[in-house]
Image 1: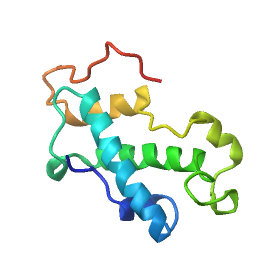
Image 2: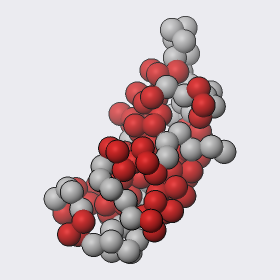
Image 3: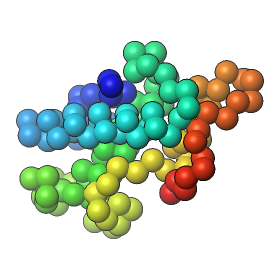
Image 4: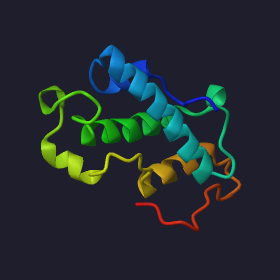
Length: 124
């Protein structure tokens, strides 16, 4: 399993990461890729994935790291969003929102009208 994004990609979209945050981000980005792959029936290889896979992966990890800041070893003074944003994922879990899943589906849809997701489960 290869992540769709790197810690450097996350830092470019958010803020500079410390060495320890980069290690955590790398693990979380691998986990985000696994969640995306589990949600899609026909997920592409990381090397050929559309750019939206990188964007969604970074968004998932950023939300988790913002919500879990103190537990991950960095505090609110390093956060770039207001504390209210952390309420989106109070447990700091990686979440794939329905809007993000729709973007991923459209990115890999070949135009044949095929639904690629496993929407039997509820996405929030």
